[in-house]
Image (cartoon, rainbow, N blue to C red; front, side):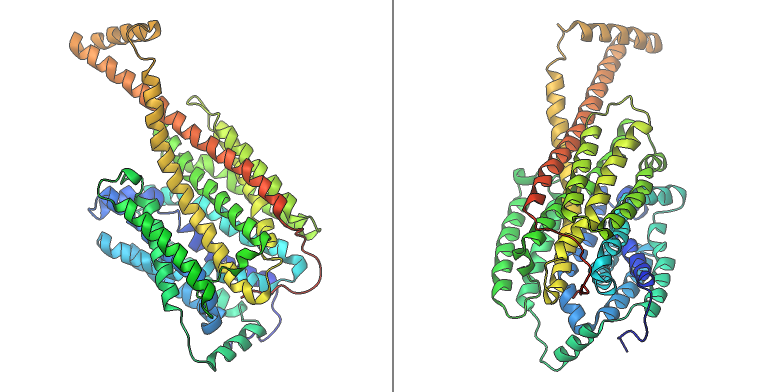
Length: 528
């Protein structure tokens, strides 16, 4: 039996579906800070350990757009609970892995299972709450989608430092069991989904194998590009790996769009993109999550590399933003419930995101912890104003039959935005560090009186310690090179934050192209 046997409080349903979603989104970032521990524990190269992240993201992205098709044929409740079960078992196997190949295989299984959790949980919320309460429901979902990647590096760093990297996977076991129990009691398929599945069961099973093959090619090429692009020197790769991946990605994407547009039962439908609200919301969510993941990766790296913070203290500096996000999403849910146009909340959130990023671009190496906390708080409050209104605006004009495809596609773009932001941040940091190091070298000449004074004082101090003039000179030059490299890296980080600020400011103008987005009282909003 899959239809609800009795009326259930929608907030109990929301709690049941948000718990596994939080767990799944958390796993996209929780392992980032533990890669060197994983590499050491499994006797693997540091560069090879990055496949722990890449394999999960690729598998996760592959399943996201398929959720609508799987839900229609298998049943959303059944598929949701199956995903929770497999995800929990795969998490246990990740913790038990004895070598890197086993861990990567288990992460692929974990990603395949976790890919269905986000779109299914969002579809359940859309079906459970009436239209006038969609703002509050999407706000609750936003708690998982926005706070989880913020807390991921902090929690992962603390667990790794205090216990072992294996426990970043083991913590999913009690959460997964709790989520399964709650969903088995409170989550049921709506009547229209039951009828749809019964109709499909009487028809011959038609699966879009060409579409799945093209989708797999596109996702795998994209994820490897983002993961290995900087390591392989992008288009300077002498072995042609990046060039080959780009060709495969472009040809695969064009072929996928062409094929899915002409097949009767596409595995990925791009028709929701014809709606201007959904198209604009897709672009905004991709870029907004790129900024979130990019800054969430760069800021801890800056604190640990340049300011001497360990993983725990870097997490403590970043964690206050999560508290303000909770307050923000509650305020936003209330504003949406009062009939506020989602477009203006999105524009305000993008403005705050730009301001927070711009503020971070003006930091320096003499800052105290509170001077890092507040720019981060402003940025994350901006994301809190964006997420729930963006979901309301995106799905408001999408027909019910297309909502399953829309939810999966939107979740895919949200996740891929995070991958893109992480890769962009790493690439820009390394490229801008090289640029600033060369520019700083221009002022390091023997005719610079400040440089001459520094070297004289440094050599005198080093000579007292070593008694060797040659060694003192060499140590002074090394100290100077260290200062140059530190300043170049700091300027590179600040450049990245400035680029994120410009992106937020430009995105605000795309809101002008959206239609009025108010959650009016009235008809129920369905999904999938």
